[in-house]
View 1 (cartoon, rainbow, N blue to C red):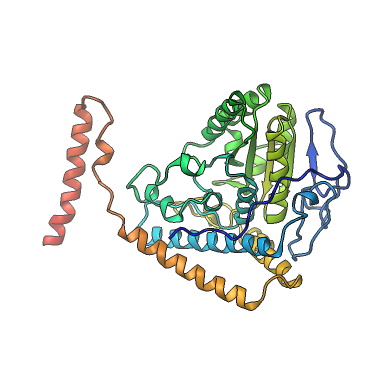
View 2 (tube, rainbow, N blue to C red):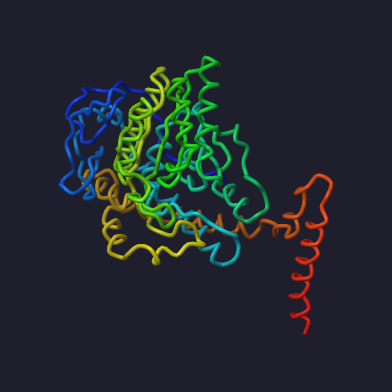
Length: 401
């Protein structure tokens, strides 16, 4: 069974006026557009269409990109986020139970991924990191196919060309260069599709990202750089990564940057649609900084309690992206208890399917790590293989005692 979303893609729309935006965007000229900040003066300037309380905020610049959204599509976005979170929670539990070697959770980043993922067209191409489970969902990749690599039984469980969704990239930041090169090829082919590359705030410090910015700007490549700023690059806060807000880095390379509320699925949808439309129209790259928060650990090998406090996490829990949209749906009478109950049952069914699929996967070959290191073999690798074999055999001997 392939799980699909009820949130349909909408035709592209032109932007409305360019003033009065709840956000901040800096163009190639370095001129800052008129902005309106969020409620608290201490909050960063960002594009926001839904407040944490679920109230709709008007935005003259980006409202046009979600003006035609229907109640059914809003429910679809909510469904996307709920099921993605359920899949993610099941994968985390499976890792804790020894079924997966590692897992990178997206908990808290559902709106950034679902909003941006639903903004893409079928012919657009996506280059993810290793955490874009929600984007994979939007691109039609069965969630069970994401788990083989984390179990160690394959190097990626899907054909990238079937969904225009590249395999997960473990090397930090390198996918931005891959995306830029692909986008340059799109231009040479004369296509009107766009490319979107995902990366985190920590990856923004990598040289690969800076090189991708340079090449994309010089060659006017149709690429959107979507940075999910979840505040922590493993254990380093954003202020240790950059002296300026991340979106402002774009102006140094000659293209626009915009910061969006990454916990607001409508804002992420609207801003990404705008950026992708720019790319398709030949206006070059855009940097989107989705200002969000990693609610859990960086990966299941990480302990976030060692470097951040509970107060910070609790403050961000109040901005939960799923709760925000639910409040809006309920206030607008777009969803009733029957919808939420049906979705809860679907969520549990998805969890069972994921669990059964992982446990049906073969155990990884423990000795595969020693293969293909050298074309003709190597004495040191042979020695290490023998040592590992003896280590594995010791467990069998212990069980036989």
